[in-house]
Image (cartoon, rainbow, N blue to C red; front, side, top):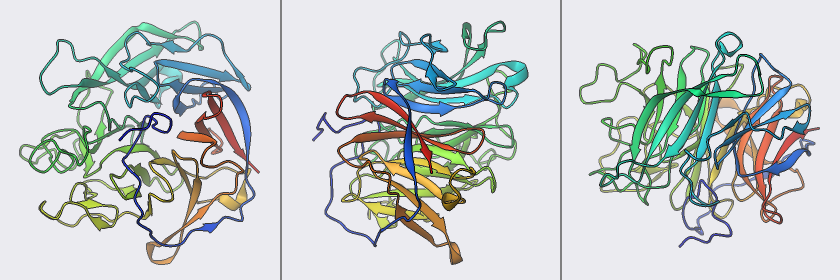
Length: 395
């Protein structure tokens, strides 16, 4: 079933011959500017107001690299390679997320999402996901203090795949975390899968307050007072939310949710929202024998597998360099295409393929990044060289 030549860390499932809708080619004039091609499996991107000249990129194997004024620093900001669980370049585990505290300039704190071995071995547990806090070295902004580590949130994963793993701070100061459904095809764990089960953290967007030890649950989280529900849950019914982001203007939370057999989807995440998985994939029934969700929130866009294989969520463009992209949600697929979604009347979104000169067969699109100016970056692996690369979208 798996073909290692094309299987990245966020693999979904087999191709389908289903077709859905029409897709236009964007007239936006966009090209790619190479920043570096000396990375290894880049999974996450972050910036800080404290040091705006620095771009931070996670490598799946366990390093956070720094790009300073266009040059890749030889010494990693953080190297936890020996602690990260990742067996090979096609494993979905590893160092998957990075977020700097809103008060990083004064407290030096940042957070990572990573996979670690389950020790001791436990039946039904493949590995564990950890959200960790670290603090930058007080005397060197280019180095993290490894001894400052504290574990914030730890939870079990029954399979190796569908780990989500993105981290973002909202304007409310809380840390948002994406967690996949625990892996295995069809969300097979539990009677109706993990994503619809409010008693675990899998298949969810989580929201916690990291300013307490190890963390606290915001009082207005939607399921704080729901019996047998995890208070950390912000939204649920997701399969594998691979990359999410906040629109810096509207504060809306967008997520790319990886599909199973036929459809990939983009969701606008709202507090307490149920996004339908496992009974629903995209806009379609998936498991007719599952109970129907009450008031599921429909995806704002979907595409079938002939157009791609595994969605990579992106950002709403709020930069200045490319006016034609203003207000559009830019996202991609691991197979190579990059699209824009344009909002229209009656909450309808129009999807267009960006003409960037690179597509399927050239690269795997692992992730996207946004700098302090709102300009966007693409994190990729180049298929001809197997090098990890960072590109900037430019006019």
